Length: 379
Image (tube, rainbow, N blue to C red):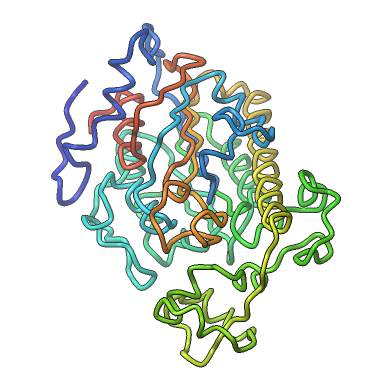
């Protein structure tokens, strides 16, 4: 395998190798002995906010992810993949550039990803790939510069769903048959306030009728008013006793825009939760996982129908995880606990050995050079 040669300050660093080494060095090998005759297509599917311990093939008792499980059965599953940050914007800048957030400098909403960085779509484009991103917008919006290197980058005006991005990606793929393609597909279906469509919302807790039940839908207002939410500590100088005043919608809206800059006089009320209430929030999150997984199933079946799976490298991952009350917090971005950083990561496709389960720690920051290596492209 050719060592990475890009300058560490502007592209893939020399330390972006451990994931590559695992593909080559583990007993039995994760890469098949016979290389594919042509460079494969590449599809990266990122399920926003998907934590590893809620994936069935990683030991979660609920069968939340049958489609992802099927990808893992055909390929290599990494059980301990670590995200470079606990929220999307710096994560994707790191995934595309193979640089940690301090190196690429994108860790706040007012920052823009530098177009001079060497990125995965840029390199693939140089080697003849058509490149496109189909993302839910939000923190992946083109306004942050994450479209850098893509021939086409379609983002939704708000936090969009796989309902939008998977069909758009398939329509684009149908127009690309004469050269290899790279497609990024992403959706925010798991993002708070965990509102999957009916049928998925009550999939895992259909009989709940507690304090947070509201026509089968949770609200941001509810999630932000949970008693021990770390928002309260950040908002009051770690003084929970200062939270007596009633909550306001203004405070909630301000939090969504800038979580640590809510005006001092905007207080959120306590909302005590019983174990059943917390369990219902988790059930909504799991229902959202199953909904996102249903769209992964659609993508896989459509690729099969087009005879594209045989020569397509399919990578499925979470971009970061999600806190579900373990440390007094529902959400992400504020903390760096395991539930917010450990994500599922699966590779399948030409040259990838089937049914391999890797327990060694790997990092999403190494994903780009790994993809290039699997495409026989020097980085």
